[in-house]
Image 1: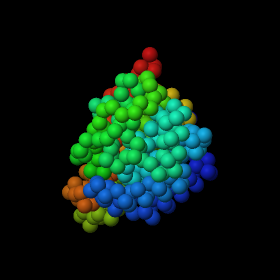
Image 2: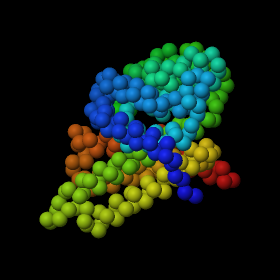
Image 3: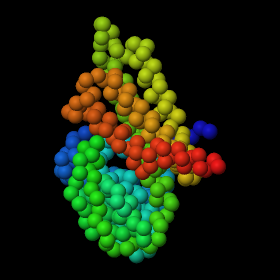
Image 4: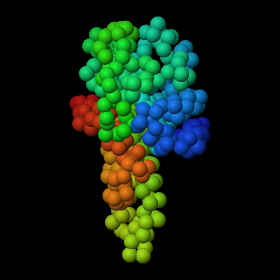
Length: 316
């Protein structure tokens, strides 16, 4: 099956691309890694004005209603530009806040970009817990509004600042979390990873066209072409899985999309690192912003093994 975006969705993607290109996201990412959030929060507000977070919030709470396909389109662009922050966690929080009281109190600000949310299962690390205005802890007895967080810990991706949420806090929803929350988290992660892979491939193609060896461009070597072709094929196979999962929102489809997109992005990262040579290892070079994110997203919201197991379980 062939999935094509309509004219409105293509225009939405183009508008986000233009917004993020003008925003100099690498500068915002590096500041975010140092705990300086002003530039990232300003960018967050512009994304909210474009409707990104409202795509996960019901209309009765000042959102646009859940639109998984449009959300996937947006997250591909967020990944392409390495936008920092708990993006996946904020849209996941919208799926967790089902009770009318907490939803009415918290969701309008999330949709408008006035609040940033993070989510973590009990005992796991939360992303950007020091920055988040809404910290949701998924505990055995339900979803709680965590009263605070522990100190920030370093991460493989410097822009992904990890903390543990403190136990207790207000009980917002009793019982197990709705399964839609995990599905939305995995879909958004898959789309973000697809965007990361596309950026890595684009930057690597540009680099091998400029870098020369033996008097010719490195990109003219057959071995280099084969590596880039393999990376491109992996991304092109992942893209329809991500869009198809956004249409069906079936657990197996979402799991397949997540593992396919994240593995494709990880393969692109390995190819990009090899073809860039020593410069690819340096933190000062912008490529590193996407390399570390590809590795981190690979295990976020479900490892490859967990996602493959979900696909196999659905097939009986």
